[in-house]
Every structure is written in C-alpha cells, then in structure tokens.
Length: 443
Image (cartoon, rainbow, N blue to C red):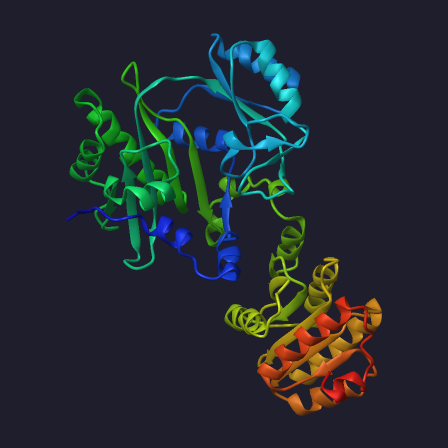
C-alpha cells in the first residue's frame, strides 16, 4: 500500500528548524558524497531518465567546442560548483550569476573564461566561495509545467519516501513554509518499491498532462531505481519539467550517496571532487578522523561522536564557542592525536584546546603520555585542558600535571569546560597562561 499526505517534507522541516546554530552547522556537513550536475545528468540518462543534451567543459576553448557540438542558438552554461543558489551567486571577479543563458559558441567561450578558475560565492558557500573548475553546457528547453521531486530516506519509518510538489523551480523550504499543502509525501514499502500505481498517482497528483503521465511514471520509477541501486541518500530533481514539446526532463539534479556504501559503489565514488570540500576535512578523513570545522575559538579533541557533541554543547553552555567537531575514534593513539593537533592548530582562531577522552580500549596513562609527547614535539604554546576518564585515569592525571607543559588535567566535565572557556578569553586578552599559577588561582 502507498500513502499520500499533504505535509512538508521532513528534510525541509529539519533544515528549517535545526535548533541551535551549532547543530545547524553540523547538519550542513553531513557525510554524504555529492557529485557535480553533469555527472548526475549522465547517470540519470544511463537509467532512462530524460535530461537536456549537454556536455562538460574545463576550459574556455573546450566550452566553445561543446557549444558548437550541441548546436542551436539557445543554450545554458552552468558553473560546476557543489553549492545551491548558483544562479543568484557571483564570482570573485565580479561576474554575476553562475547559471547564464547563452546564444552562441562565442558566448560560451566568453562566460567559461570568466567562470573557470574563479570562486563562486553563494548563500551556501559563504564569503570564501568555491572554486569553479568546469562548466556544464546544455540545450535550453522550455517548460510548460515545472515540478519538484525528491527521493530520500525517512529515518522515522526507516524506508524511502518520495517528496513531490507542483511548485517546481522554487526552494522547497520556501514552499514548505508558505504553501505546505502544495507538497505531497509518499511513503514507499521497500519490499514493493515504486509500483506503476504509485508512480502514476504521483504524476497525476503533480499535474502532468494526460499525454505525459506514462513518461512521468517511468521517470519516477527510474529515479527510484537509481536511488536503490546506487545507494543514494537523496535524489532531488528541481525542476522535473514537462516541456513545450511534451517531454519529461530532469532540468536540474542534485544527487548524494551514502559514504558507507563506498566499498560497493567504486565508480560513483571515483567521481568525488575534493576541490569542492574543505581541505582540512579531506586531510582528516585520510587519517581516519571525523573532523568538521566550525566558527569558534576552542579546539576540541574527543573520542566518540556522542561525547564530541556533548563536549561542544557544554562549551556553548559556558559561554564559549567550539572551533571544530573532532572525533579521533575509539583508538585515540599518539598518531591520531598528532594528526588531530595538526588540524586544530592550523586554525589561527584557536586560543585554547579541550581534550576530552574516555580511555576504554586504550588506557588513560598511554593517552596522556602520547598527548605529552605530541605537545613537546610540536612545541605547542596553546593552553590545553585535558579530561581523561577510564582505565588508569589517576596515573594519567599525575603524568599530565608533572609534565611542566601547558596541559591542565581536570576530572569534572563542567569544570573542564569552564576552564577552557576562561583560558580562551585570557589568551584573546593577550594574557600568558602560567603553568601552576593562574590555574591554581582559579582565574
């Protein structure tokens, strides 16, 4: 059985009501692979989903050749940057719009020259922007009707859900907020999949003309096939259009894939573009660390994602601001700690570091010795608040306090968080943290 309901999609609701700024920042950094639009179009086309004819170009000269190959005098050139809002963005050289209508191969060459090698700034990228290494040139198709359609996993039901709206071409968050009745949510039984009846009902409910219903049905079923066979976490088509010549085409596509499926999706993950990702986060992944850069000034080094979240929350509760989410994993070896400190200290905003580790698999005294060795080797001057709990924690406390380094061992979580915030404030005031003096005075 299938179920139709007039409710905002849970993904949009999560994005719109994400709670605290900290959790919102982490939500934006979900560990799912995103691929460029031209790759998404190629993949959809291979599954029988209609897309406008197009091709990627990595230089102005190649863009000119691609435009000539496509032919015609009505095309679109799109900057291949992994961020939303490209059309309303602007480049660091002053060019406005990462999506432009072009009417000739000469225009393709001109705009490609202004896009490739420059950073596109959008609402999602922030002022740093993201580098454009390629452009996608495709034929311009005119839509009679535009719809929104997405397939994603619903954690509540632990099954796929199809979210669709008759108001395509708009931000789904805006639609969910202003006209939630325009959104149709269809829960899918993973054992049945998207049957003809389900797909046909969605196509009809959206408003496809009668002569396009069967093509739309097939497109919806093929999109679901991509979702399942490629371990996608989201397939978002906005808009899914019925063109003036009654074709059903995916005009724009955003696809993300489950990182846990990399071992069986080798081809898909070979399309990853690390230039679109934060360089520190890429480097962290190479060392087996879960790292997300934030906007604060207190570096965090923690083992376990839950403990990491709790650590950042208690820093916020004490008036501080975490500079990162960093989970070194269950091992917390000296090598992992060294890599973690490299990442944390590469951020010039960091004025204090909070190390919060539970020694279960690895003893606390071994962690403490590794921490001391790393601080000595790196000659770190940044004050470090260290909270080690678990096996041999008393020995670890003794090692840290006798090290003569700016590492302060505190057992209580609240006291440790409070001290890290105080140290951060003192450093920003230009005060030197004197080992064994200001700490003992309680600051």
